[in-house]
Length: 66
Image (tube, rainbow, N blue to C red; front, top):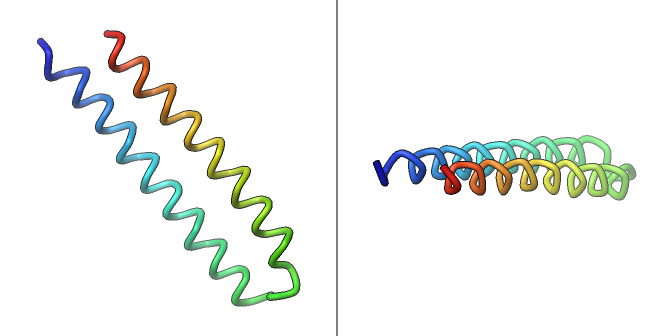
């Protein structure tokens, strides 16, 4: 079936978008609470978003190779 890998890739992308949105939301909340820690929060946010994006890319590749 051709559609099953596409569904798997779509689920990986949806999960990554939810995860990155949650990271961004939490980071904005943290910066609003403590503006002096904005640089540290931003660095941690970018690293976490990159890790989530890497996992999503891996999931898309695995799904499309099936």
